[in-house]
Image (cartoon, rainbow, N blue to C red; front, side, top):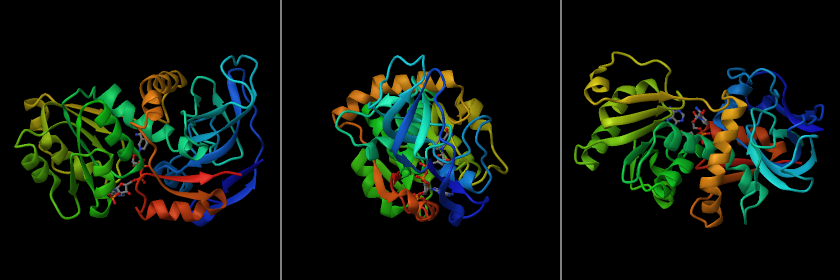
Length: 326
Ligand SMILES: NC(=O)c1ccc[n+]([C@@H]2O[C@H](COP(=O)([O-])OP(=O)(O)OC[C@H]3O[C@@H](n4cnc5c(N)ncnc54)[C@H](OP(=O)(O)O)[C@@H]3O)[C@@H](O)[C@H]2O)c1
């Protein structure tokens, strides 16, 4: 089959279309003819050699896909050839064919195309896991979502809204309109304003109940400071720095804070099945009703993968960058 391969670890130009063995579905897996995949920030790290795939997983980039079932393993009961599916992968999305466990695969939501469905799994599962499973976000609570216009951020804003919470975001100023359109109640231009002061002023010194963070070290102290009593900080990435300096940890005890961290890719198959099925039950009716939607910035032909990577690396995307496969 054809796949986007990495010549050697490095910049976007290391990506090229090549030949790779077609995968075979295991007993509980389906083989999917991929129609679209989408970029995630992790793809850039993996391309640079800084984020190897979990052991035994495909070394091909791509953490999600949408397409059509080509064939099924002997133990598969849920799907048949021709079904339109999408789902989370531990790797292997930038390819003509991918295998996925039958219970991680989900139907393409009613009324959506493969391009749209490919933009859902990674970011909606990550945001759903962060808000619902980890932070236990409640109706009426305030949540600060950093990188609000990122793929994960745009999913988190929408999920927070349908959960009845009030999302506040940080994002560079030109990206504020999309965040507000998706349901953010307040957007902070973190490049020109101190988000701590802004959040405290906006919330009348109350602070927020949940913070979803991708920046890490440079934000850690201020994240602790803006959390209200019994607040929860969910840490998902270290786009800023993995290290934090000279911290005052007092707020953790004083406000009884919880600090939670997670990476989705390394989770067990059982966890991914439970999470996928929970999002399916919760979110698929909302996609069908238009209350949730994949936010797509740009669609590239997969031969333009280097261009797509450069675009994401320049922080230009608002929502997802999708690759049309084949
Ligand atoms: N732990 C997990 O399970 C998990 C799962 C999925 C993704 N993630 C992580 O979540 C983050 C978002 O992923 P994504 O694919 O949604 O990203 P994305 O669409 O590429 O968006 C990233 C955005 O973050 C903003 N940003 C703020 N500070 C930044 C900094 N110091 N360096 C670079 N960008 C900065 C930029 O927007 P502005 O213009 O607004 O600054 C940038 O466009 C990534 O770090 C990714 O690795 C974690």
